Image 1 (spheres, helix red, strand yellow):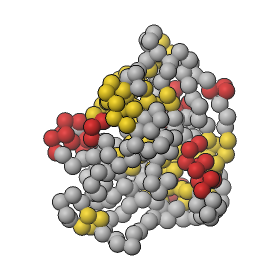
Image 2 (cartoon, rainbow, N blue to C red):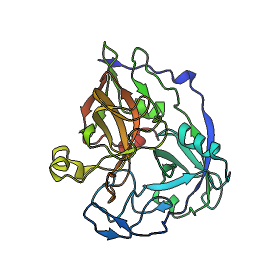
Image 3 (cartoon, one colour):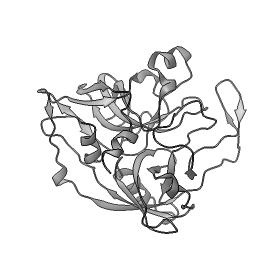
Image 4 (cartoon, rainbow, N blue to C red):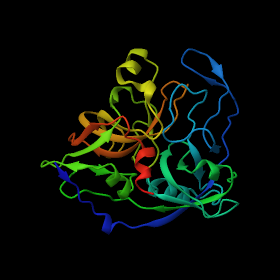
Length: 295
C-alpha cells in the first residue's frame, strides 16, 4: 500500500449559495410506521440545535432529522430549479461554508452531506454560531471536489472535498484499490429509499432498520451522524443499484426514520463496480474527527 495522489490541482472551486430552510410539515401531520403507529415528529429542514455530526443517528424521537443547518436555493430563485441543482450537485462534504447575511455574517462551517427528495445541503457550525442564525440567512459554499480522481485508480469519487479525502489517510494498492477508514461494513440488501436514482451527485439513500436480527448483525443502533461506512454489494457509479462484488463508501447524513423503507441516510463518496474500495475498520471514522484536522 502507498500514499495516494489526486488531481486536486486541476479541480475548479466555484461559489454556490442557499438559504436556511424552514422545517417542513405535511398536510397530514402524522407519520405512520410499518406497525401502523402514528406520530407527529420533528423532521427535515431548519436549524437543529442539539443534533450534530458525532451524535447518534438512531433511537431519536424524530424522522429524517438533518444535523446542524439545512439550506436550499428554492426561495432565492423561485421557479428556477437550476441554482438549487447546482447547490446540491457541486457541494461536497468538507467544503467551507460562510454565512453571508444576518447576525452571524462571516462565521464559517463545513458541509456534512446532502439529503435527497427535499434537496437540502447540510452544514455543521459551532453551537454558538447556531444561536446567531435565523431561517432565511444566506450561506455561501466554496464548492470543490467535483471530478476528483486518484492517479492509478478506477474508483469513482463524488461529493467529497479533496482535503477531507486526504484527512482520511487513504492508501492505494498496486491494483488501483483504495483503502479508507470506515466504522462498519453494511450489506446492500437492506438499502431502501433513494435506490435507483439517475445519479449519485446529490441526495442519499437509506439504511432500512426494521429487521431486528439485521440491525444487530451490522451494529446499526450504534450509527452516528457523520460516520463513514462501506456498503457491500452496492454500486452507485451511475445511480444506486445492488451489484454483487461492488462496493460503495458513504457518509451518514441524516437520522433514522419511522416510515417504511427509510432509515439513516448515506451519501455516496466513492463507488467501485470492481470492488476496489477496501475498508479499514475504525470506530472513530467520523466527520467530527476528520474536520479537526482541517481546521
